[in-house]
Structures are given as structure tokens and as C-alpha cells.
Image (cartoon, rainbow, N blue to C red; front, side):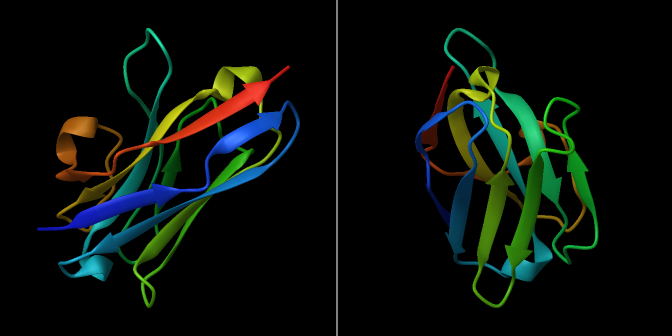
Length: 124
């Protein structure tokens, strides 16, 4: 069983930056791809970014490409999402997810473990 915890959410203004962190415990961390998803009120959960277990491969949603950067530190069992140039439409609950497979995926059903989520609110 893998336990996942996110942190770093908050209230910021448009154009600001925020860094989300995810810590995972249990399992072989470096063997697992990880991802960030988000869900805005009244909308379905959507893919944000993913990174392979080795950190060699990343993938971003078009809506965040060039603004967000996903990274991981396998020595510390942590993953981060650096969010720059935030927009009001980035407002959502952000979820960290772990996939019991090294390869990346943009599909939520491919992930096995999820955190509770952290709220990000961007005011205009």
C-alpha cells in the first residue's frame, strides 16, 4: 500500500507562482510513475502533468505547458509541481497520484493511489 500526501496549495493572485509537493510512502518509489490531476468546481477531474519513475519522461496538458514544471526526487520519495504565471482558470483541487508502473499516463484510471487533494485558488 502506498500512502500519498499533497501540500503547498493556497490563495494567490493571477501571475503569481506556487509550488505543490507530494510525498509518497510505501512501495518502490522510483518504479512508479506519478501524476498531478485537478478538479475545478462542477467539472470533471483533468490531467495536469505526469513524470516517469526514472524522471526521464514528462508530459503536460496543453493548458499548463510552458507554465508548470513537474519534477521528482527519488531519494526523498517526493514529487513537485512548480506552477508559474498562474491564471484564475487554474483554480482547482490538485491531486497527486501514483501509478504502479514506470511509464507515464494521462488517464486517471491508470493510477492506483491518490492523495486527498490540496486547494489552489487564483484570484484575478
